[in-house]
Length: 407
Image (cartoon, rainbow, N blue to C red; front, side, top):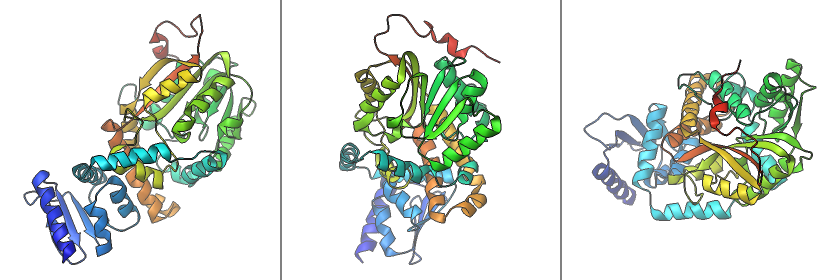
């Protein structure tokens, strides 16, 4: 049959170029070991002929889709599954697929208040209980800061928040805007430890409700105002502005406008911090091998990642000067790795909170992100900025102040 010949050629090509410890099991009972000299670490079961097409063109999008939709079954450890999928995608990658991804990235992605609210709701409003299963107790859903490398996740997340607030020198009485405040961890820390008056905004109903509850429990209602509000609708002036894990939702074509809004909201002597994931493609293209397409489809609708060069260019165009830039890529690889481990340990509880499809989406997404950050396919930068044209420094002359130990 035609499909048998096509599959046989595919298997032979893989064996010649890269003998992967992978076994294929077909609905017919046939088995193919792609490395006959090594026991398979991963087994992919193809339950019907229609599922074979996902394997014959094994982009990360096709493989991920097939797994999520139940078109294939995969056995093996999570790390081996991710490594095997990336190895297959790498073997069959072509220049044409990379060009198509860049085209979709540049000309796709519409953003307005309604679309952005729907996209945020899809990702964040699964349920608070779902996120509680694998995040730290403070529910910080962004890159931790492993100052020494051996911190547990909860400690690394507090250190990340302190690292940000120290970098921008938050002072008692400062008015701080936290764009994309999540479940309120940074806002609470800024008010409790640094004495700031905080406005935190989110588009997620679940985040809003739990963040407000946590503020009430801390007795900080007079210091923290959590709102469901689009960043484009915020008014007033702020001494400090933080945006952590939010600008990935803005869209490449709207970055200048986003930074112009930060410029407008920032006082003339104010300091802002943008902390966000960036593309490692110099042209702000997607992650390779179809990973970006999978994430767009199943995880972050309308999410787009700029290269750090585009971030700095757009900041300057918006009237902001970047004073300090730090790449935390290895920190995020470690963070996502811990999240993936937590997710695996909580499998039973998570499956009670959501359906099989969403469970599979998040399982491969978290482990895949750890892999991508570790291999420099995506990065994450903290950028401290001020309004351009200052004649006197707003920050100390060296970075030493960022590492001064505080009680």
